[in-house]
Length: 143
Image (cartoon, rainbow, N blue to C red; front, side, top):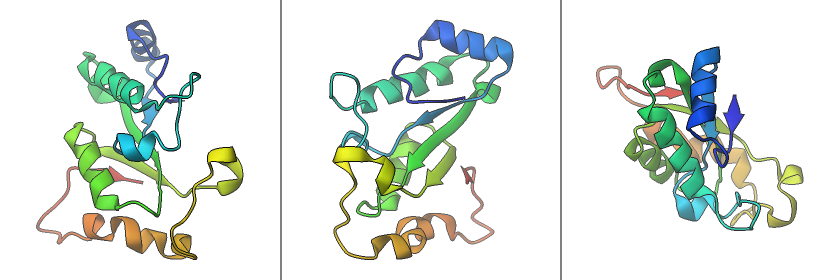
């Protein structure tokens, strides 16, 4: 199940665990990145709510099978290492990265600082994170 986490309380987490559902939370990075694109019904940034949901899932006894990780819409204006480090600081090891679709972003559409940034996005964003020597290994799952 994919959620922004805003309404994910303990009862929902318990129900998902009971049903054997994996729960992933949408999180685009630290507050400055996430809150620029994802707001709650009141128009305020939703980073705090998303992180609270992640922590709620992580505290659950069935966390190992319950937490599916985060789904991040990549912002080519931001440093991928900063986003990765933020996720790791939250104990996140499963990360899904999506390219942005401007048509779906609405009035707060992502504004690229340089033309054609999306064309080089995979190189720009995560190259230094995922290009590790085999001997270094990784305890993270990237998709």
